[in-house]
Length: 607
Image 1 (cartoon, rainbow, N blue to C red):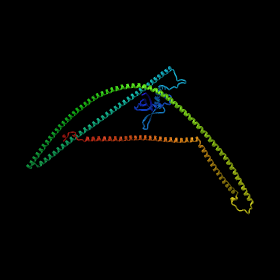
Image 2 (cartoon, rainbow, N blue to C red):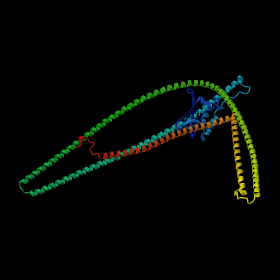
Image 3 (spheres, rainbow, N blue to C red):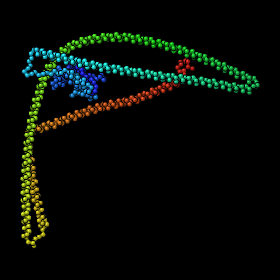
Image 4 (cartoon, one colour):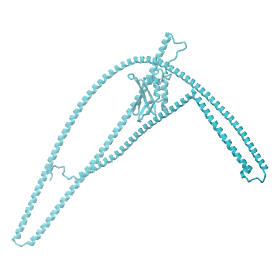
């Protein structure tokens, strides 16, 4: 890293670091965003970086590296590519920054060292004595040290500011993580408390259910005992009644009575035996239950011993692993120390070689700046000469165009004057012809009148109104004369039109041999072709941009639709999962409630 500076772009603060890679001849401008730790890079090769300042008289000197880096950082901005990703680019003008950072930027710009431009030698100069040269070299070395010191101080201040902001952000992230952990623990405790409450409720319900079942069983047993007692009383009462009826019937009845009594005694003995057997089975069952509970306790004690032994073994393994981990960490720190010492040694060697390279690069940059200045001067002179030649040629063409325009205007004026003269002559001839026609008409009318007056009345024959009436004769004569004059004028116009067309064709043929006219025609054709080519290129670019925009829009719509569909289906899936969980819980509760008592006992003890 050779330079560092802060910049506020679009309301967000970035740390702009400049990295120089001599291996690939590349200078990289990296923008580090403090909000989300993102880094954006804009690489430039040495030739591209130098070409940015070829027309800048202050920054063309390669020794003004800070000014060059500041010039580029001022014009860094963010744009979006065809995929919508934010990338770093170089603008044509300095990008605007926030108001609160303008004063800091002005102070940093004011602290920058002035550009050390190459001053031209004075007239008659070029040679200085040894003392003046030594003094100038000493001042130049002092200026370089001062510039280096200012750059180091500014870079150190920027680095400290960056580290301070980074530490604050890290502390904030740690606080957020601690709060998230605390919130997670609280939620876990709430869930555990809720589960405990649910377990207690289920245990209370199970206990109440067991008590209810026991009460029902005791009630049923009492009811059965009462029913048996009532049946026995009814049987005895019937027997007594029968005995009373059969009393005194003889020995057979007595014998039968004795047999019945014997049967009753045998039934009582059987019931007593059954009762003793049931009590013995109950005692055996209680003994088996006690044995089973003792086995379960022994098994539990054995499992607890195994768990304790396993935990002790795991604890021993953890201690051993911790010791191995401490040994590995110690070995890693020792290796890192050796690597750091080796890296520092190599860095010192690299810095020593870098100083030598910097000196060589400075000498080479000075020579290249001098050559570049000379080449730029030659290019500038060539551009000025070419511009003067172009201006001269354009002035000459403009004068020739004005001369041709004046000649064409004079020709048009001569043609207009000739046309006006011909129109005046035509009008004079028309007036003369009209006067002759009227004179002839008056003479013919006068002659007809005289003939009519000299002929006798008896010999007169009736004539047509058009022949005898003066008005009809005059109209007929006027029509004949007008038709002839009209046909004559039409033929004259046709002849003049043909002469004008022939003259125009000759003038066009004469003008076609003019080199300026051919050049103008060729330039017009070239402009038309160039305009068509530009329109085609613009249409192609517009079509490509529209296609890119449509593709990006389609991709965005597909992504939005996919997310929307995922959200919708995720909600459906969650509802279905909740419903399945609810049904599963209900099934478990229902199955638990319907389990008969004694299911947990061994099969051998169930009867």
